[in-house]
Length: 155
Image (cartoon, rainbow, N blue to C red; front, side):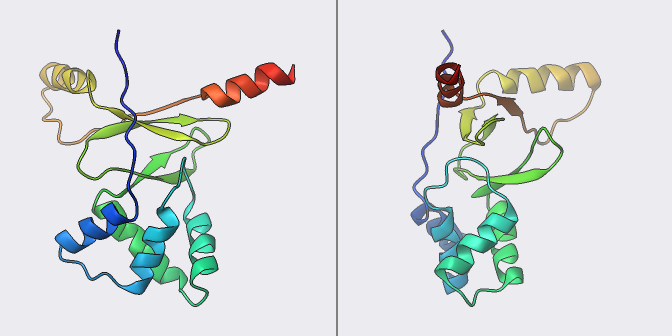
């Protein structure tokens, strides 16, 4: 039986440690954005991140939050995901682990799943097409157990 691994994040300590180890300054705005990311379960928009950051640090600027978000993306702390409706959102990730996402189409909860099995598929695709696969990302969408339970009890 194949089990998917759910990764748990220790934000913002991991985000701050990753920033520090990569040689980036631990500025107050970056600390604020890391703090806002703490405890996120599911995807979020850049606009929601900005709103939450301003709630914690009212003077923080839009460009500052977006630059911090871009930096966190570059460091693998946050990943951008495409949603089924064509819009984009972001999820907090563990930077050291290659993984993929399962996103609840109802509530937005996001679960990281490990790369088991998918690596073998990318190797097969590379052999079949002649491409050298340099990067891959898988996003799966469905309904989480909590939303399915909620739907069944609402009937």
